[in-house]
Image (cartoon, rainbow, N blue to C red):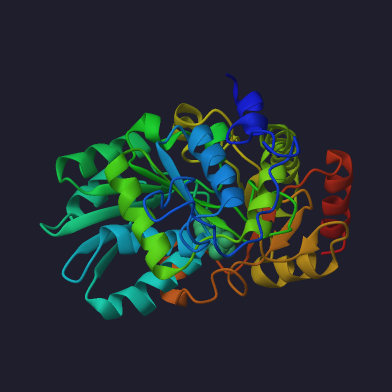
Length: 383
Ligand SMILES: Cc1ncc(COP(=O)(O)O)c(C=O)c1O
């Protein structure tokens, strides 16, 4: 069936007792077993190990992404953590996109490196740089594409090929495009990660994460971490995310169309220094973005002429757009990564990977495109 049908129906069946069309919120710690010999016969034992509401969302996301299994987590960061714990151990080495989300960088450099795991932050947009970073103990390559916030893209097929040759796991953080626009498994990746906080929920209502696996072996490793670390998503969050997912493609199409119009508006504006949106022909990796995804998404960044001071002035004074962290919601958000989402990345590293001080990140929501453009025009006018 098509994506729109699956985003509504996959994983969900009417409640067998009441006929309720929505999977109920199963707010229960434990599940009564029919007998010792029939332990687990109904599929659930204890809600840290599995919960029927969470399961419905896991089945839906596995279906949308084309994987064998999905494990849902309390946040996107606990999903990233689960991937690292599942495929790395002391003495192993991981290659991570040097432009990955700031939290992924912090988790690697400030926590997991303390446990004997080595990291190389490589420019994964360049397969040669990834190949040059490979060591004999490289067990995981984690790429984020397009990356937060630079929008730099990584060629998933090329990196999957490198991972395959060295028998490492290639995990792709697919948060920005979702399986509606980008299917990492079809391009050779092994594992797909989401902060469901973003487009999957779409309504600024929850924080959550998901890891989808292409093989049973990888799925089992991730499930083991989900249960052992106690980082499973809560049933309320799963329920809200189940509802949000039903309109994923409709929201993404509308938000992406607005993002394109806004990127074109900004590119033509005399007070704007530069705009980065994969849909623009001027985007350095426009060809790759077009080749490996079926849409460009609704994230972009721009720099106002006058750099940081001018950018701050715009963000402090703009109407309609909210100055806030998060992305992917129906509300349009504007963010200053240097002081907000990527504040924990050292300045030298930020400068090296292109997170410039004046970078203004925009998450285009579902409001009328004209209203969003008019608000930007007014804010630029007074800069
Ligand atoms: C690409 C990406 N991955 C992971 C995360 C972490 O997700 P969460 O905030 O749900 O923990 C984020 C959060 O912004 C993100 O943008």
